[in-house]
Each structure stands twice: as C-alpha cells, then as structure tokens.
Length: 356
Image 1 (cartoon, helix red, strand yellow):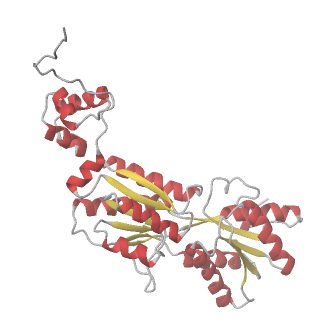
Image 2: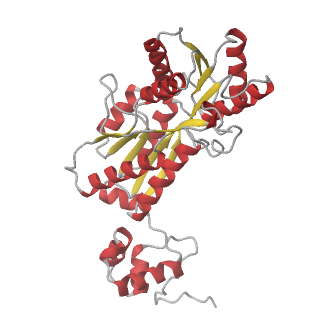
Image 3: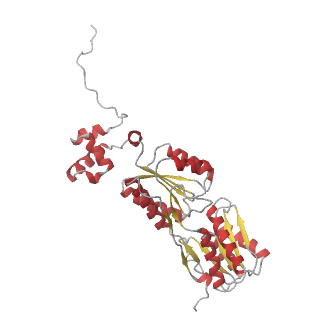
C-alpha cells in the first residue's frame, strides 16, 4: 500500500545557501526591520540597548547587508569610489589610508581602483564604479579623457579631484584638493641655485603618463630660464620611477654634461639612484653634485647623505578630500571648493655642506 504525503503543510527550514535577510535579523533580535536598517545606516541613531541587541544577532548569524539591493532602493550606496594612479607609491597610499579611515568613521566603505597612470584605464574604472551608484567619487589629478570628464560631470554625486590644482586650461569637474606641481619644480630648482649650484639638470620618470611630473618639469625649465645661467637640461624616461632608472638617467646626464653641479629629481627613488651613481663615480654630494628629490619617502632621511626633498601634504589631502565629500553628502547645497595646499621643502645634507 502506497504511503500518501500528508496534506498538512510543513514549515521549511532555511537552506544553507539561502541568503539571510534584514527581516531574519529583525525577527531574531525582536525588533522591526526598519530598526535594523537604521542601525546599519546610522548606528548612533539607535538606542544603546537596541544597538547592542542587533549587533549581537548580526555577529551570531553572520549577516552581511545586501548593498546592491540597498543602492537600488536608495539610488545610491554607502560606497565611495577612489581611483589612484598607483598603490606602490607610498604617498598615494598614505592619502588612501587617510580617506579610508575618515569614510569608515562616517559608515561609508571605499572601493579602490588603480589606473597605473593610464587615462584609458582610469576611464574604464570610473565607468565600472559609477554603474554601482556610489555615494561619491575621489580621483587623482585633473587630466582625464573627455569621456571621463563627461561621466564625472554628469554622475550626480560629489566628486573630488586630488593631488593637483585647477587651471583655466583644465578646470575642476566639481571640487579639488591639491597643490601646484609647477611651483614644486620651480622651488626644487631655486633651492639648488640658492645653495650655490650654477648648472642644474632635471631627471624625470613616467613624464608622458603622469601630467604632474610634466608640470614639475615645466617648473624646473621656467626657473632655469628665469635665472639665465644656462639652457634647461632635462632627461626623462617613460619608465616608472625607480632607483635603477635614476642611475641610468644621471649617467646619461653626466655623459653629455659632465660639468653639472646640481640635479632635480622627479621622485626620491630616482634621487637615491643619483646618490648611488655619484658615489660610484667618486663625486661628493653636495660639494660636487647637489641633489633634491620629491616625495620624502621612507628612506629619504636615512640614506647617505640624507636627501633634501619636497614633502607633499599626502595626509592633509586625504583629510580635506574626505571632509568635502562628507559635507556635501550631509548638505547637497554645500559649495564646490578648491583647496590649494603648500608643500614643505625638507633640507638635508644632499644640498648643503656637512657641518663637520
């Protein structure tokens, strides 16, 4: 005799692969789904007792909010897109860490993309990020493809361009936080002349990819012409800045201009290569060859001799960019602000004679 199934419906248990919902969390915590939603968006707006209860259930069940569904409902997410040209460069990393800390404190998460100084790659990353309805965007520099500028200008969310300042030829899309790379190049060069150099060369890497390096090169050339002591001597390479590239470039410079007595470097990694090559050739730094870099990287104060360099305000850039974004998210009528910061010239023994 066949056993017929019972006509009484039986409660089905949740499959292991079925995603937990906000309703599940609310039920387990004994609160409404709206309370869970409010806790996830603004935990400080929920009473301490309810927040503790909801947090305990979330931890116990391993609940992860469905941000895609939330962004579809609210037309934006709690995610902020950040585009950097590199993560191997420590000062970009410092800016990102500062941004991340500020946004996390405000209950936003960052989505990081790395363009490798490629404008087309940057365009692809921005298009992909905007498809997920971010709350805001932070990008590096103001030089973008026309399509990128159009996307950022019409995305309807706050945008901050960092590490550069607007110009009539390249205005900001929305807000900006940065400094003049042209003035950095002028200041590096002027310092060498003021310290006694009379024939100053420039070496730079990734100059055709990184417009900020190009601006520092222009600043060097402008100061050389202003002083009128010699014609500009600029040697650049398409390669990423590194110590071996610095060794190669200064060797090329000294081969054709053996009488130079100062060198401006677009990056401290290049400057370290100059110090190594000067030592190999028996040149005394700074007596025979003064050297100035850019970045104040971790080794700059401890190499031999300690390196004179320009220290960019990497942490301040992150703090101000995050502040502008959060102010706009709290008040969509907050003005579009452009912040022009100063860099610090850190003078060490590579451009001044030892006191001993």
